[in-house]
Every structure is written in C-alpha cells, then in structure tokens.
Length: 554
Image 1 (cartoon, helix red, strand yellow):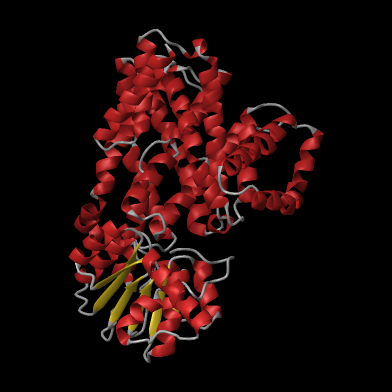
Image 2 (image 1 turned 30 degrees about the vertical axis):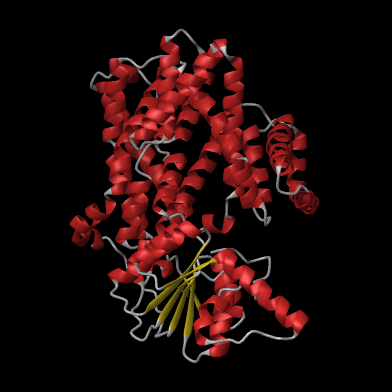
C-alpha cells in the first residue's frame, strides 16, 4: 500500500493547492482517505517516526531564524503572553458553557482538560502565516515581523509544554548543557568548513537530531527543546539562513507524515465537524484580542489589523499539543480529530480574509484609529526623509556602491533605504544617509514623507517582485522623476520597462562590464571615459562591498 499512500497524498495536496489553500489541508484529508481504506497509524510505525522527525526539524528551523532581540520587544513577548492568558480566560468558560448546552464531546470534562484544549486553541499557524507573508512580500514589514515574533513566542510556549509533558525528572547531567554555548566557537569552525552542498545538509541534520534531539533526550529533556536551542545557537552564523533553506524540504516532507498520522486516527463524525465549526466561529475573538493588545503597545491600527488577521487561525502546534495530550491519555483521541478539522476550516476562511484585509481596514478605519495610543511606536511613525535628490532602495553591496558613486560625482542630498537595522547602523557609522524601511511593504509607502526635489530613484533590490511593487507605489505617489532598476534575469527587464522604469540593467552584465573596466584600468592603464550616460551602469558595480559581517543583497 506504500505507493497508494504517496499517490493519494500527492493528489490531495494538489487538489487543495489548486484552490489556493495550504497543501497541509490536503495532507490531513489524505489521512482520512487512507483511514477509510483500512490503513491505521498502528500499522505504519515508520510514519510516526517520520512525523517526530518533522516536528524536530520544524523546531530546529525556527531556532535558525530566531532573532532573540526581536523577542524582547514588548509587543512580542508581552503581547503573546497576554494573548495566551486572555485566550485561556475566554476559551475555558466558553467550552464549559458548550458542555452545559449538551455538546457531548465536552460533557464531564475537568478543569485541567478544558485548560489543555484552550491552550491548544490559543496558537496561531506558523505555516499559514509564513506562506501568506511570503506570497504578499511582507516578511520584513513591521506587521510581518510582529506576527512572526508572536508566533515564535507561541512556539516556545508549546516547546515548554512538550518538555513538561515528558514527565520524567531530568538527569543531573542536564546541567552540563548550560556549557553548550561555550562550544559555539568550535561548532562555528565546523560550520565554516562543511561547504554548501550535501555536507551542509548533513551538518544540519547532525546538529538537529544528534547534538540537539539525542543529546537532550539522553539527559531526560524533551528532544524538540534540544533542536530549538541548538538552532538558536547556530542562528548567529552567516550561513544560518542557507542552512535553513537547505533542510527546508526535509522538514516539509517529514511534516507531511505528521499530518497524515492525524487523519489515520479516525474519521470525524458529524458531531465532531459541528463542534469544530463552532470553534471556528470563536476565531474573531482571537483576532479582536490581538488588535486590542497590539494597539496598546502603540502600533498603528492598520499594523495591528494586518498582524491580527495573519494570526487569525488555529495552529499545527495546537495539533502537536493535542497529539501529546491524547497519547498521554489526558484528552480523548477524538479531540485530535476535532482540532484537525477546526484547523482546516480556519484556513478556508483565513485565506480570503487575509487577501481582503485592506478593504476591511478602509471600511472600519475611523473606528480602528480610535484604538491607537500616542505617541506611536517608534517603528510605526511617519518616515522623515528630508528632501533628497537621489533615492536608493536597498543598501546592500550594490546600493552601497551606487551611493558612493553618486556622492563622489554629484551634489545634492542622497538617501538610502534599507530594511535591516544592522545595515542601517553600519552605513550611518560610515557617514551615509540611510533610514530604516522596507520598500516592499505597503506601510512604508504610506508613512513615507514626500520629497518634492527627488530626481532619480535607484531600485537596488535583486527581488524582481519587490522592484515591481516599488514602481507601482511610486506611481501612486505621482512621482515624476526617473527610475532605474537592476534585474537578475533578462525576462524581468521587459516587465519593469512596461511598468514605467526608464533604465534597466542586468546585475550580472553590469558586473561583467565592471570587471572588464577594472582589468583595462589595472593592466592597460587606460581607464574608460566616464560620461553621465554611464553613471547609472557604473554606479551599480559592486566595487565597494559592505563588510561580510553585515552585507546582504537587499
């Protein structure tokens, strides 16, 4: 039946993806289909092992992307903590009320059981939120960063629960793990030497499954906690993002096994579907709590609304919590199915709501703005840029080179825009005029102060979608000056020109031209003549690189 498992899972995932929903809903459905064909999780122990690997790698990848500084922001740690408390205070009495009203799945439940269910329902989906943010290009927007930060805090709450639920008293050797950060220099040296291919993937698996999961389990701690902590330990390395991308598909494949095991526990009854639908109707309360809390931390109402809708669903981590509770006998197994159905239905509604959130904001803008507290959050205030003559969007190596060339040849103020705060700080230390902002974020353009003397905008972002978006926003602001952009692929040049960009330069062609100019100058001592027409092309040469510690292609 192994071929049938793969084929059915693939078909269900494809069918769900065709209607614009996350494939994981299809994987849950595939589990139910396989159950009707007589396949149960007990007959496929390897599936449960793969599912455990998926959860472990999920926690490891979260650790790799974790910026500990972002978790110390009040809107993240306090917002997520207060929302968890508020969710428990709301869901426990609500579930108790449903039990009194005759919902059989809640009849006779203890307070601890109601707390467990409420805890599972308090989470929002990391998988869904990341997909929505990536599709909209808002991963680095303020609301996106706030949403991701809250999700990571929720994941940490879940890991703490998973660790406590293990029930075993840790070994005295567990204290030795406090010395693990001292091994970071050695680990980083190995990290540097593994290269970029399959050795990098193997290194990641060893760190997640051996140094993390196995080592922590050996001293009586939860393996998932070990994977998360080791991921955090590696997060500061320059190749951490590359490692996260390298193990991405391993994690996704193993997580498919997790979702399949949910469906293999049994089919939902009509009563289960009915209760799951009732739970979905309670999601607006989660959204409203997020909106209220985030505006208390002085975020704009629009930022709060976007982040809250991104978090307005149930979570795969809620499924993990429910799976552990069912395995321990703390909850009936049917609750695992109920939460799985509620999760799927919540995605069905969350997808169209997130796509129409801008219209919802415009409709209720006046009421929402009454929730705002002033002065606004420092990152959510109007962006003051003065009156520059040249504007560079993206201050990585290319933007930095463009800035320096313009500064050396033209008078007038130059301004760089960069979304990474560490790059902004670096450029300012080098006396460059740079402000923090994400040109791929609608909020950035709404908060941007007008510059009446702006003559030229350089789009130094290799992301083609980001360049197109920036052009559209400039047109909405009725910008009348010139626009120049870089591209990585020839096919992207035409769409940029059609959108209104005046000059487009291929990144690699420009680098090649710069290389030839450098060779001629160094070997033949005959530097090429520099004319105003060649300014933009020459300014895009990555000749003045930012130091490796902070440089990035913005």
